[in-house]
Image 1 (cartoon, helix red, strand yellow):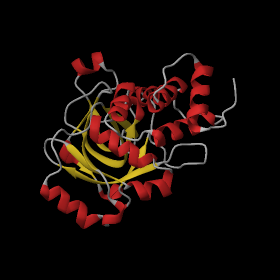
Image 2: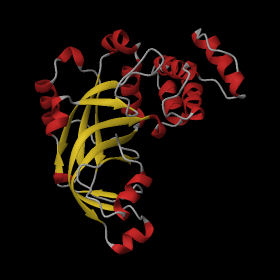
Image 3: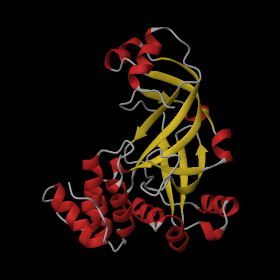
Image 4: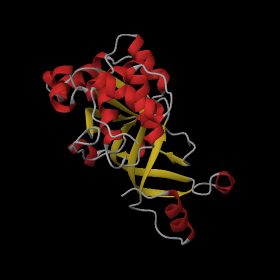
Amino acid sequence: MFLRREALLAKIAAGESLAGTALRTDRPSARRSAAVTEEEAALVKQRFPDELVGRVVPFVISGPERLDDGYAIDPMGWDLTEYDRAPGVLWIHCSYSTESEVPARIADAIVLKSKDALTALACFYPRDFSEALDDGFSWAIGELAALRGYRASVGFQIVEAKLADEETRKRIPWALDVSVARLREWSVLNLGMDDAAISAGRAAGVDTTPVARAAAKVLDAATLTGLVRSEVESVWRAAVGKPSKGAEALRAAVRDALGAQLPRT
């Protein structure tokens, strides 16, 4: 389980060891602007069978700079041993899926470290495989990520870390300098994918119906498993191309567009 900020502060205040602490760090606009290189394409071909590789999108998932969450992680200090045993990309940190939720694993990945950054080659599934796996959702996310990018979030476990300097901790009391971190997983987040990104995808010819279907399933569920309803509705609205006229009007629009049997509120 990843530690919440309040619990981390309590741990710091108590002077407890930080080793083994599991945390998350988010990175906005994580898609790398440069195209996949020939060497990277060869790595993908070597690692994964052709029939499971569709769109390959390069990401920068962690860098040396300290972001708003307060963690500065040495890019060369990443331990990838555990991650490489099951190198998947998750959707919003879901490690499982049910009929009422969006799929958990949406891509395979190769993660590479250098002195400048921790990067990843997200290998999204081809459309035919994705249609059988998750009704086309993972394919659609790959197409949208290639077009506009996504926010990435890294789940990691501290191996070696110390408190940041006093001046930094005046601004961010929980700030840490992490010299060695074990990568547990990394996720693509819908929070970085605003309405404009999905709308732009639709305008460019990307079929966003699978995204709308997945959002419909989430909104039809009894719980949203950590997702904020308004954010899911925002994704829904953009994916079906319907303006928002209140919650019930939105649900009616999706019922009309997708035939989803959603309860009225």
